[in-house]
Length: 293
Image 1 (tube, rainbow, N blue to C red):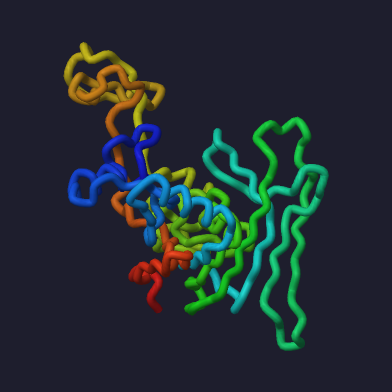
Image 2 (cartoon, rainbow, N blue to C red):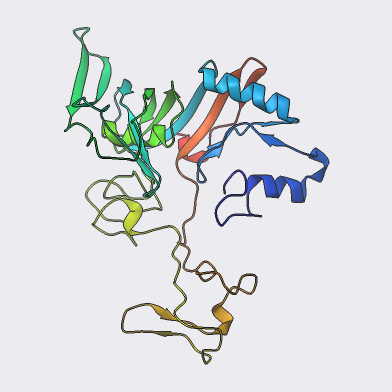
């Protein structure tokens, strides 16, 4: 769930949950955010001045952050990704992109080999279109250390040096080791349930790849007014024809119906904020079950 009210989320947020079920905590001020499906450490402050001080510390890059991720494939012992990130707010996803005027999209550096040399792979692409108004790609760097691997999956510790939106997820995809059950940046063969990788397509998955073809939440656009006769039908255009009972009673004028067709498997993303080390102390969350060998 999101940290605070945003978009169509008003009550079902971390802030809303704490206010409803733990009123004794009083007013809380979020210091940072995690992506909705990400688990782990989430810091709050008791007052706005403390929250501002923590945010400044986070922005300065002095907070050491450690995440865990379960990725597809046999991950090298160590790996570093230095690649700028451009976030597209319209598409709600990010990608590695070169700085304007450059052709270098980023560098993936693997751990030292037997001969002591480090393997560097520079991925190049065309320079960013100067007419692109979506913003300037921002500097981003993440280091990774493998915890264990079974040859099919690997669990890695992630050390983001910067804090860009979806940074770890994008850098893992860019390196060729995407998070197994990531519905946006995951491997083509993986479904949102995270149970299948390799050459097979999991149940409910599609070969088009990337979970964008099988969204976690599907909504149907209202194709009728509340006066439509009872019954649910599917029109020739494939869209649901709805009756009054399908209209959200809390918002009869909303352009969408209440949520429909949740996937059976709605487990969190296999990405976990494990440790934040700040000037005020160390904050840790135990590794989830999927991170255990």
